[in-house]
Amino acid sequence: MRWPVLFFFVLLIALQYPLWFGQGGWAHVREAERDLAVLREANDKTAQRNSVMAAEVKDLKAGYDAIEDKARFELGFIKPGEVFVQIPDSGQVQGSP
Image 1 (spheres, rainbow, N blue to C red):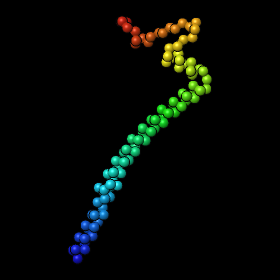
Image 2: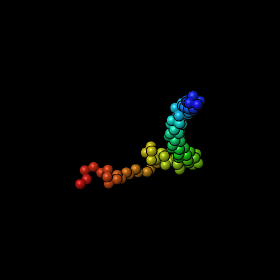
Image 3: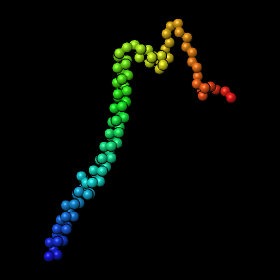
Image 4: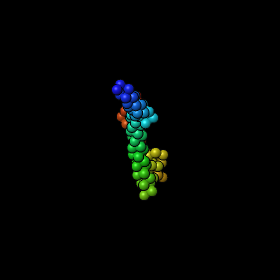
């Protein structure tokens, strides 16, 4: 009677080993779920950035106002006859008491 019980116990252990420690075991599943969460977070950030860029492209295609704003603020362009005046923030003034 002792041999069949021991045989089935060893068989049970042999069948459970791949579930816990094998290639598709619980440890690998947990690691894959963590990797998936990281990738989903990165995808969400990328999707948000892409939507901002798509809105900017739409604005640039729609009219010249967005192009003019970009040229003025990013490239420092001014129209002929305009005077450029820059007023620094109070935190940027050098030598103030």
